[in-house]
Image (cartoon, rainbow, N blue to C red; front, side, top):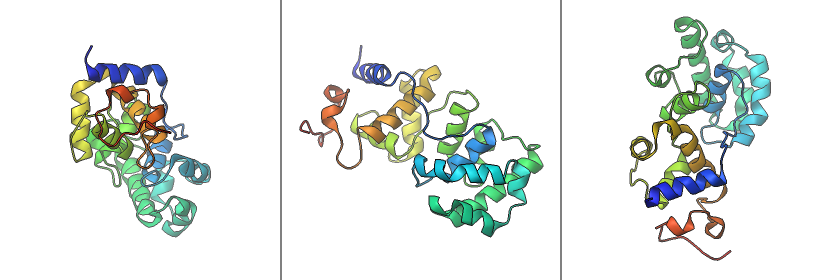
Length: 210
């Protein structure tokens, strides 16, 4: 068994059922929450979204939303001006071109305002059950430190991980990398002493002390 396989197997043993921290039910709720999560924690998003979901239950409701009112609702998540504009624009496209249903392809999702590959892959993997490698800042950091990818752009890291992870495990494995980065392999004060893949890690900055 090679080093990469050992890393993925150890993370699977530690995080057998990885789940996103976002709390949402419908594809539309997932789309909205993931757009709001940019540069914001899942916990903060989850505090804001119940009121948003209640006020805007359909794509048409976002399309008809008053921008100032929506901004006030989502203000705590940051970048609320651009996020409100994107949500309204998404609502118009989804309601007018997709009969109110969030599209289920990478191409259609990334054509929506405010939706990049990361957001699209969150929906594909967590909502639509399609294999998807989710790459955020946590996954980027972990992939670099573990020597899984040297890519400097999320898309390059995504493609590198796609090549080394079995397609059926894309979503789960990338979610494990994300959670590992959030809980252990943190940007500041990484908890290397508690890392289950420490022996496989080539990162020069790793620490063995508490």
